[in-house]
Amino acid sequence: MRLAPSLLPPRRRPSALSWLIAATTLLALLAGAFLFGLDAARRELGAATANRLFVQVIDPNRITREETAKGVLALLRGNRVVEQVRQVDQGEVARLVDPYIAPMPAADLPLPALIEATLLPTARAEVIARDLRRLPHVEAVTAAAEVQPLVRLVAALRSTALGVLLVTAAATALVAALATRGALAAEMGTLSILHQLGATDRQLAEVVLDRIGRDAATGALAGLLLSIVAVSLLGQRLAALGIGGFGILGWLGLAILTLAMVALTLATAAATMAIRFRHMP
Image (cartoon, rainbow, N blue to C red; front, side, top):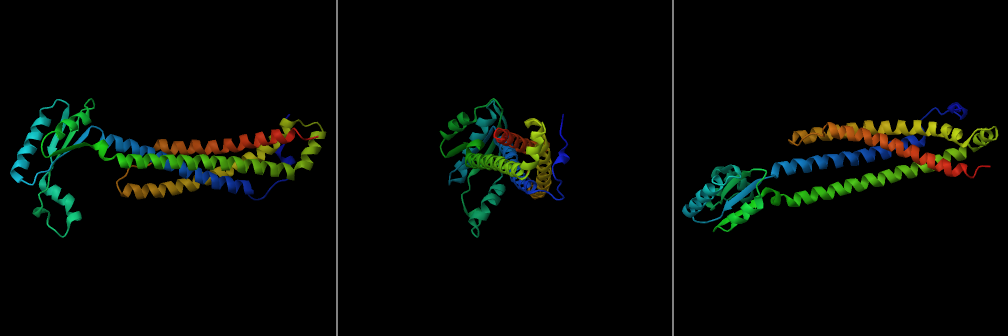
């Protein structure tokens, strides 16, 4: 038989547990959103730099520089694993370096010849780059190698977000345990009477868990709504910069994470009550 939750005195306002769960859920969801967003950025970065090759012909002599660039273009176009290759227009090169050398005109400098190549997925970009570097005045590097510092930064930020998420989950469990002990202490008189009247530990636990579950669900829902607002505003700012949105999988991950926070609260409360009921007379 299930005992009615109304056996405990009713409350007219959200409990402290609801506010604490709302705060920890908000922090956990923001950390989770940061983690999901960084993971998406890592995948986009990998897709954008995969099988890309950058070649520079660095020679102060314009004639030999152009001849070397033509030779590199011929080598790349003759390679079966090269899907597309182009030489960057010198005007575009000048616009790239102009912000760094102003007020000096870019035309006064012997700008390198830049070549971009897109390789087939089966190509070994590093091998091709190494072969090109054997040519005089030629520097070749894969796009993946160029963005390695950024990749390491993204990995460090992902680890930080994961650490914040785990710490927040631990804090949620601690809050749930303390709130459960406080609820048991406050209602111990009622629970002891019900126990003496024949109520089992399971029935008593269901009464307390029902209230804690409501508080946890209320707090988690509040944290979810606040995180949706925060992530949506941030997504708009990122979209204005041309960065991809959060994605349906990210929103689904936040919903699952919210349910996990409620489940963690209930599991911790149940474990706390099991330990406490062992010492009841």
